[in-house]
Length: 228
Image 1 (cartoon, rainbow, N blue to C red):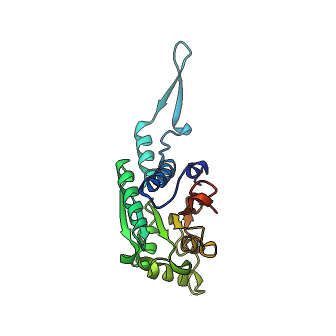
Image 2: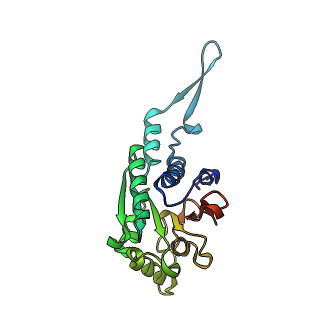
């Protein structure tokens, strides 16, 4: 079970200017660092040895610790974005740059080029220790941007199809960060909300609650970034 601190996202300042995008990236990177932080020392691997002077010495089984650390590191981080004006793409590329600087393997993919069934059932739900991060804007009337229309429609149809087993995406780990504007109250971040919900309906496991980016910074409770 992933232990998560909500305070990691509360400091994010979200709007469409580039400087604010970097603030959101910092918050996302904090999330990734905590989630992937290696826990390579196990108490049951420690052996207490008493010296002649009665002082305790802790011996670690280093080879086993290295192996455990390797297992705690993700094989890859898959960053997907859906955009209409290019904002989500800029954010995705910045996340990729900063994530790879931490030594993590990552990729950036436009959802318009993705086969949703192949991506979600093979790449993302392959049980290889990776995580999928979706950066998705909301466009006209609460719908997704054109580049993500097919991906989100397939996912919605699959989640609603009684013939599809609801454990289809079991083993997949994901996070969703929506880009929206709370001035449009009826459709605020609808695309991101629905993406998050449909993935969960198919048994994918979120590593954090849905993040909502608000272009209307003045009305945002946390100065630009909200939670459900």
